[in-house]
Image (cartoon, rainbow, N blue to C red; front, side):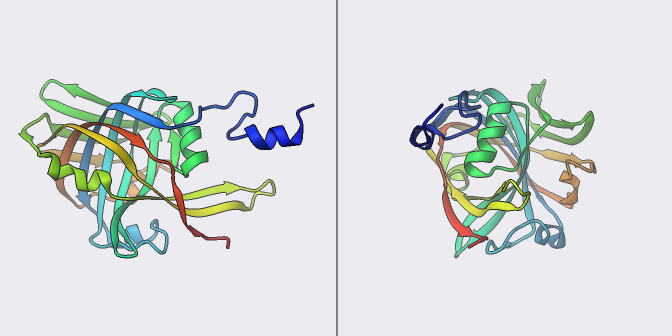
Length: 246
């Protein structure tokens, strides 16, 4: 039998004898973003952003991220919605939804940080002169984003403020009785960023209603801009900014 003190010392993830992901740090090489920024309805944002985060303009960043080389997580793609917010006067971003195609980062993301990850089939590819992102969920195409490929260079200073800003998550882990055992506002940062290039160009975004992948609940009212970014970074571990159960 495994002694209780040994379990306490070694346990960090499920399952105990063969965790679904290794202990960090988690370094990402050639991480590639396509970020399409759009205006949505304030009423829609107010339904999904938790207090004490505050909303300014009703803006959403719809992101596709290619991660071909990540410690412990492998090669995968994810996509989702990130909402600019402020917390105690500091600008940051609230991660609202994420859809990806690889088990370890789904499990690690949810258990460690509280990333709102669900299994789906996102893709991000260059098709001739167009950077294309799609998300399929349970056989339905729920998101399509397109962007002109490298139409204009962006400087490091154009993208680093957003990459280095704090990010926020609503972490929920249930108790065995189905109630919330953990319910926290978590802050994390992307660290040790190596900028490799960034570009902008014309962009379009189409979101389709789906019962279980409700990206269209934050409807597209106006495309504001788009960025294509290539970098290396380390995904830092988090801190608890608010315990909703305290």
